[in-house]
Length: 386
Image (cartoon, rainbow, N blue to C red; front, side, top):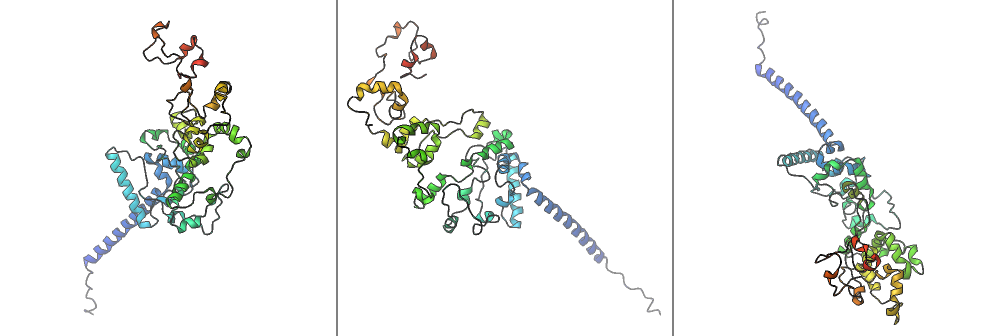
């Protein structure tokens, strides 16, 4: 009995401490894991990107794009979970560093291109039918076999090339909202693959650039089939929509045409510009495009032996037609022929004594509307420009 009454030895105190520490550790790990998962999920939303004001242009253009139901992280982070957290941490550290040094983060550019694997999470080109617009021929399978990445053609699908369009500078952040984003993405030439991309890639890879390579039809518009199109009406057509003409004839020119860029819809909003017309006229375009110049530099059949005696009649009827090849002055930056009006009609005031003029004139007097108080504007403006 005495042996039974002997008390069992007490368990070591270290055992209770170990259990206590393990319980507390597991509790805090559960809290940290929950907080981390919740934070990771919250920072994976596209709305979180909007919270950083540097991302406003990217957010609002994405919101107006065809990919507005695809979260940013689906394309702009590594698909592996462990890399996702690292991307976020590095991005956050980088932004904090920029703000602390008061360094602007614009223009924002991706350090790496979006891989095909990100696109293929939604798009399966092996099972998905592609319906190109118009008569275009787009063999996606051939491009993939040659190692052409999706973003080489579709890089502007979500943001409309706003970095290249100089629209992401810090001074414009306050102007960005959903309406500006919608305007930026409304211009299809900035959201769809353009012909320049196709042509540059084909030339670099020695692939044919003939029209039939990418187009099913002969590509000749109906207006071009009119009998008098080449001799009479093509200039009038160009005056109505010069950009449309350039979409084909620009590639036929041996030299790049400057000044054809029209004012974009977003520039109108940000800079309060009223017009969208290009900075070059159809008359100057005909003198710059080598495809047009090849024909315009030839002497027309109407310029016969009596032309010198009769050309003033034609000029008085339609001087604009003459200016498609000629200039008023020989000093114009656009020239198709070396013959200008001033070649035969020198300045009317050569040898004119300014002292005899009833009103004092400056050493280099420019023409103003005041001159036409006495002079005939139609006569003077043929040579003088205000």
